[in-house]
Structures are given as C-alpha cells and as structure tokens.
Image (tube, rainbow, N blue to C red; front, side):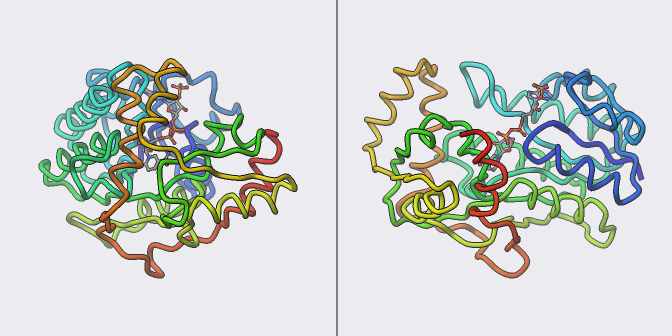
Length: 289
Ligand SMILES: NC(=O)c1ccc[n+]([C@@H]2O[C@H](COP(=O)([O-])OP(=O)(O)OC[C@H]3O[C@@H](n4cnc5c(N)ncnc54)[C@H](OP(=O)(O)O)[C@@H]3O)[C@@H](O)[C@H]2O)c1
C-alpha cells in the first residue's frame, strides 16, 4: 500500500513520518523543500517535490499512490480561503486522476459548522470536496494545537497572553504528536471504509485561564491572560501587518467557535489523547524562551 504524506516537516507531519517508518512503511513525502527534511529520512522514504497548492504538481507526484494523509498547507497569501481552495483543488485532482482510494484529512474542530469560522471554513470546504469524490475518508477534526503558542512566542515571553474568548471558555487543546499518532493508526488500519469523522481532542478541555496557570507552573514564570474585544484584536492584527482577509480569517477561528458552538463529536475515549499541555510546555515551549 503506497502511502503519501503531505507537509512532512509540518507540526504533525514531522511526527507522522517517523511513526510510519517505525511501522515498516516506506512513505512517499510531498514537499516543496526536500532539502529541509532530515537527512536520515532519505534512506527510509521516497521524496517528491510538489507544491500542495499546484494541482499538476500533486497529480504528478502521487502517481501510484493509494492512500494519502492530506494537510491543507497553512495559508500564505493575502487571501487565505483562496489558498485553501487551491489546496483542495490539488487534492481532488490527484484523487480523481490517480485513483487514490483512501484519504485521511487533517481537519479541525469547527469544520462541521461549514461557514462562519474563519480559516476553518477552508477546511470545511475541503471536507465537502473529498466527500463528493466518494472515496474512503477519515476527517480528523483536531483541537487547538499546543504549537499555536509558538506563533506568538513574544506574548509567552512577556507573560501576557490575549484572547477574544471568555477566559473560562473551555475548548480542546492537543499536541500535534498525538494527532500524528491517530493519523498513523488510521492510515495503517485497513478495516474502516466510507466517510468517517474522528475528533482528536487532546487530554482535556482547557480555558485560557487554565492554560495560563499551567504555563506558569511548567515554565517557572508568571503567565497571565487578558480578554480583548473582537475589534481590539482585529486592530492589533492589522497593525501587525496582516492583510484584512487574513485578520478576518484568523479572528474568525475564535469568534466562530464561541457562544453557542457545540462540537459535533463529544469527547470520548476514542477522541482523547495522552500528551498534556504541561509536558509539552516543559519539553517544547521552554527551550524557545
Ligand atoms: N493550528 C491549529 O490549531 C490547527 C487545528 C486544526 C487544523 N489545523 C490545520 O492544520 C493544517 C496545518 O497547520 P499548521 O499551522 O500546523 O502548519 P504545518 O503543518 O506546520 O505546515 C507548515 C508546513 O507546510 C509546508 N507547506 C507550506 N506551504 C506548502 C505548500 N504550498 N505545499 C507544500 N507544503 C507546504 C511547509 O513546508 P515548506 O515551507 O518547507 O514547503 C511547512 O513544513 C492547516 O490546514 C490548519 O488549518 C490547524
């Protein structure tokens, strides 16, 4: 079974690829930058250069592939949802042209809303497009990645986090390594078929107030969090140079999953994974401070 992995150097891909190698699989890695992959991988994986927003490149790179772990790459242009749409087009072209039978898709909690959750709307559109292809698919609806704290490392360093969510609003937080584990197990399990949704919720739902407490203890420095209004955070994003559509799309991921949003899948033993925020913060956040 030929398994392709996209964004092999990404937050999830960098864990998923070695897991597949340890399982005895020789994955095919799709990357724009083969030179950035760890050198040891070349002995254990095949590597194809492809931009996952370019249908022709993805079609050419996935010839002979039966199963794909698909990640819509993070948006880079001033129009995030167009970036997601281009990635969707690349995947659907590859599935249609190369007869890929199975897809495991890295989606997000909130994609079930379909509209009104900023960038997550792009993932929702990918889910719908894959569903329309009629192939076997598992949509991994992931919680909020611990690694998002690295995007705003300056705030962690200064000990002042900010959010537009109520400080006691709980949501799922998850280690990308745990998503990779669920992804690997799903890719290697031949017993499922049709359309599946599987949430990956991490060990526990956390509020931003609880996150600040956990980081304070794990990092040995005080971390606080303040709630901003939507307009305040939007203005900060624009002042930091984000294009207007990006500011909207980033803000929408919080505002769209606030208020009366209830995830389609409740937390169960199936959706709960092991790595705790405190452990991740000590191992992976602390070295950046
Ligand atoms: N962050 C969250 O909380 C969260 C939650 C649920 C779902 N998601 C979704 O997960 C996905 C990944 O998000 P992430 O922020 O964790 O990013 P990521 O997987 O770490 O992605 C970064 C990687 O993508 C590669 N990449 C970027 N553009 C590419 C392109 N056009 N073609 C091929 N590879 C490309 C980069 O490699 P090079 O630059 O070397 O090419 C880099 O290694 C997104 O679709 C996001 O919406 C995120």
